[in-house]
Length: 281
Length: 332
Image (cartoon, rainbow over the protein chains, first blue to last red):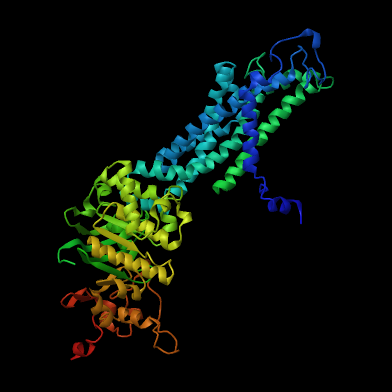
């Protein structure tokens, strides 16, 4: 008799296969708690500079070491979770909403409306993603606000295309036709019946998109166009620490690990949701 | 059943039109549906029976299919074909409901059954959420779904085939229509469940005075359920009359052939009778009677002149130059 069976005999239910959904959700919840409880968890002020402890390797006093200004890396990684989660949230929500509305109108009405939307999308897609983002941010001026605006202007196209494709299929589906046969208006069929079916794949996509947005946010901050120093943000921390990568590896490594775990949480959640909702990508 | 007609279809024609060609799919179909009557429309695949009914509620599956003529008079509603799209939404569901062959794909997969029915009730009667929910439970009970309180929260995929069909009937009934078009509702079900659904439809007719147009290719089902039968072949009605008349004394050779095709329990072990040949392609319809290339009684007249749907006897109409059982009379 193996260990699991023994546990079952004692009435303890062994949790089944740890699904990607639970694992992803777990990681995200952990980061969310860290962000919310940052004032309690962080041992030091994230922007307090202590010249006496510059470039300290990990130790009991500073578990993840200190940077070239003597700031505690652990505290900075913890506080940065607030900014980075915010980036992942707003960087996804605005494109999601705009793209969903544009895509559903385009897919449902078809004809010249569809043609107009599709040509606009082609134009946006013709530019490399990051180049267009940088151009928009440069015009508006650096900062997180500009980053969100640029994300919304560039990111909506993926959602619009996804939703449009779903609408094209679903509007000629049997249940949409049956809804029309019940005397429902176009708008009712579109929003009450097609939209909830069409949106599933976008929800799944938004989770994997959050990973890209997070990395983008870090990249933009790394280039000095997003979050401005001395605010703690993982991308900036990596940017600031790169000069010391050979002598003080801990400055860049720990924020890097933070980005990777959060991104992994989103990916796992996306996979899990896709599986749970029966969406094939 | 009363004599007042609730739906009168006259010379309904539907054509497939694209840039170059135009083929007539439905050609001059006429029939009458009375209050509380169950009319069976029988025919093989592609005979235009589903298309006829789609045309009645103006839900033709492609924009290239157009109604090219005829009228559909709905009692108290005028000509359905002349209504504006907005007026049409008042006819669909409210006056004419429709149920389909495949309830799994015709019900919304992400909305619970109860909410779909309640939505339909609220949309058509404009009543509150709680009242609609209570009525929804009533309707679920009426269509024979056990334990409606808990089943109402289930989704389509949690229902069995028969239950799904009941749920779809419930969605259609929620609007309290006068006419129900049932497009092969039992074809995808096994025989016992099929019998239950047929009984349910009959019961709804008896209790609510619902008029039903029942589309099927199964003559056995027609015999069990219907009052009147219209037999369609290649987009035309070829025989139309009371069930007993049409089944027991078919006039059209196509109807006679269909009846002969039915395997019977006493028929022995010989091969099942078949009608030779294939139904014609709508792009290349034979001249004259459309059935004549497959008909054993056809002669030169049949190839030239299209027979009209004549009432050989009161209320039993047949579109044939040489009706079954009248051949001898015709010759003398």
